[in-house]
Image 1: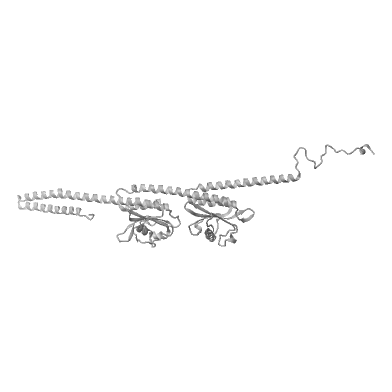
Image 2: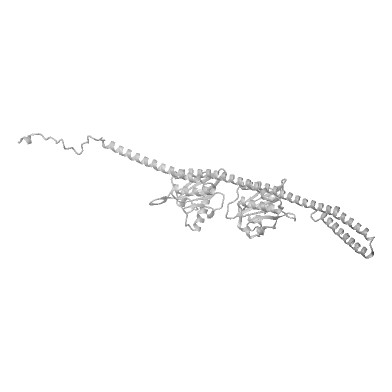
Length: 458
């Protein structure tokens, strides 16, 4: 046996066993390494979830900023529909007013472009019927609307919210069918519900702020109208001109389509339109209406309190026989009072397609009517003063004619009569003819003075 064969085998120090640990790296046993990998994966998943939640929170904050940046209630609701749909990735969204009948033109919607009128009508009626599901709850979530809600609008999943303000429930927000890339639309999550509930609450507060801003603007506009009303009526204006200014100011400030001022007619129990502005104003002037409970103006005059109607009141204000009445809807009428006694009415109406009048507008119109009644009385007093001035001028002119002109004519006649006695017959006759003409002039002047003192205005 050779020496190489007899020498024991020695491993090559430069060669490493494939399973031998690397002396420069940490080595964990297989179970510990598995646990570490699972922990890292859990940490990455949690970080991904935190980042996703942060992204949704940022999206919610952007949506809240967009909603609260609107300055009118309608703008708040329109932005709410768009932001809620984007936030939840809903296929479509809609807002339905709480106290209005179900109709497609009453919905504020997003994501329903190109939908035919029949489907829009079914959606409107279905959403209006869902309001009964809320009860005392602020949210409603239905994951299988087709199965559990036979009368619901065509959607597989629905999410509903109450839009609540200080005045109560004003609208309901609905989201339908959450969009899922690569899959059919599915139900919403509890996270979607929580996020949109925050957005709906912010929308309610924004509507309160917008309504407060609108009331402040209206009060300032009506206060400015009160100030301008007296100065807008010329000092020499008659009562009819003052009433016309009142109608025009009410039409402008109330943003109405028709305005009229009615006063008691000579016939008892009737009101006559003395001033009108806006649509068909020339057709309204001079029209009379009975003071009865069926008339909005009649009720305002009879009760001495403001009256308001949200819809279909054009005929109640103007009369059903007028074609223009069918084009008018929301209306309000307030009494014109003098020492708490109604002396007329001020009425305004809007087109059927426009919004209703609010309680603040009724209150401000009633306040404006008080100023309008004072302006009317002021104009009437000015007219009376003007007539009195004319009468005094007539009396003064009559007195001057009687005391001076007639007296001088009498004196001239007497002088000529005495001169005629010293003249021959022909000249005497000529002078006496002049005296007769002077007597006729005296009679005419006397009759004129009498007419001035007993004129038709007396």
